[in-house]
Image (cartoon, rainbow, N blue to C red; front, side):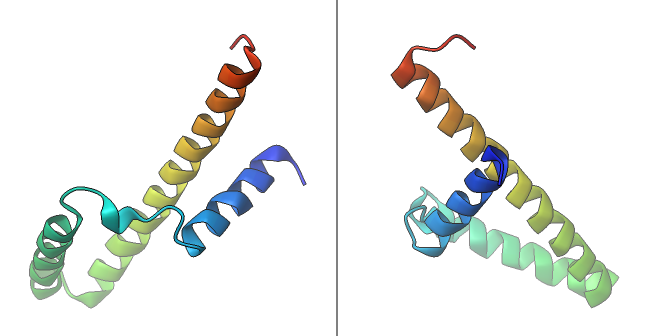
Length: 86
């Protein structure tokens, strides 16, 4: 297993065990309500298949962005602690 695979598993572990709780971010509930309202409108106009495709694409993008940020943060922390050059 390489470091990127290990970090992906570590991120999953942290999220599953609620160590990274995105619901505690400021404005979470309000954004969720706005997203749900948009989903309802999209569903009404374009149908469920389109909404499912859009949701899947958004989830994939969000997951990859979280992983990239987690990897970057982990490596940045190591550089700072070990005083390594970039």
